[in-house]
Figure (tube, rainbow, N blue to C red):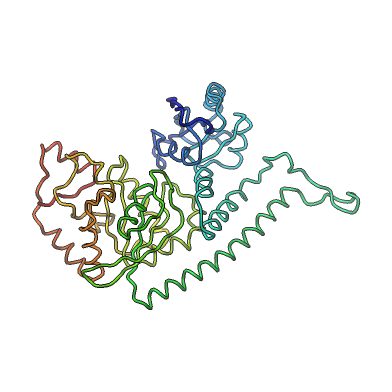
Length: 415
């Protein structure tokens, strides 16, 4: 447990206690809760304290158990917190019980992500997708958490047998709204399908940017197509898919590049379903540029999560190029000699990797060259050439080289 210091810039933001529970290796656990803190910040909260609990299994009633719940309650009162945020998913009953016990609002990771998506969606399609995910999430939370959910009496003059319960009315209204939103999203999906077929008829080579949230996709997108799409150093800065054309001089033609929504650990399944129309851009692409934050302390876990979501949406077999972004943030001893090499993904699959700094322009020419070879169908030849090239260690001691390989996931460095 470690309190966070609230800064003057956080004035006016809701004060929140962050809670993470380590179940002993069953599922991912973030001991720092740094990502949850970033999610809280993106949702308009400021973390004032962090609590780590360790259990063999979740407590059915309070998730963390009564003793830890009392400890959290004391922190809430001591910090005058207005919310408690959990890094794991809570059941509806656990959320209700915790709110009653702590006396403040309680949200889990799923609710937090949904709130951020709701605040960031700009397009009509994005708003529909988020609304659907929120409605599906809310439909599981109708567990008599509100005082108005009392049984109404039916019949003329309020006489007769018991009428429809308010909770049943709410559930039915939500169900009807879910059906209406799904129907509208079907039309959106049909429109996107028509647009994709048009690009296919025009023989447009389709490229999609994918990656963990805040990996630098939008900044790279702007650098490649010279656009001004919104980009910021925060989670889920961009939700709506943007597609632009950019010209490749070496092949004398344009290709389409799409910037898609970022992925994140434990991305709610309903959210993946809701964004199916948007994520279909990645599944239908001819090439994926998998953008990875090279400066991240947990880049391997982030890469694995992106691969998992790609498999879930049917994009696992689309050819990939790993783009290690934010190259400028790496220390000199962590940088490879060559901006292009190869890296091994799961199942022994090796793919090209390019180190870039979209802000400083480093590696962009090399990335365009890789894209050109993909369009020409010669990328496999480049891959074979990279794999057969002699391996030369980067400058520095053996310890530095080993640390560098561990830090960036580098397989080898090329002269």
